[in-house]
Length: 75
Image (cartoon, rainbow, N blue to C red; front, side, top):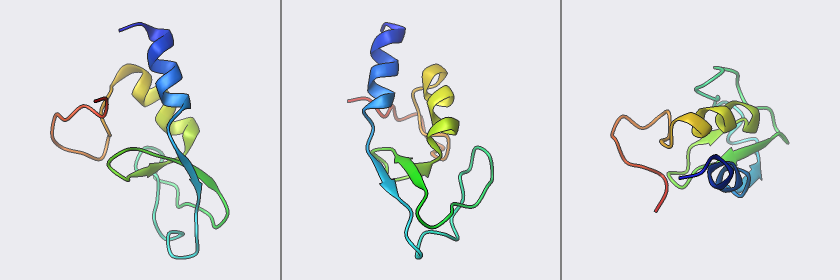
């Protein structure tokens, strides 16, 4: 798999804005709580991350960092 293909897939992941119900959650990569109105990247497993945190992670490891199994997020 080419690096360009992987970067394109990462950039095409859905993003959404954090609501007041999600504000107590945090990015498990940087351990910072999300802020209301902040845009986050959402993986197919529905885990949310700051885009700046998850992009480098997925560029080298094609799995959700929160998941403890070896399921690959690419189908």
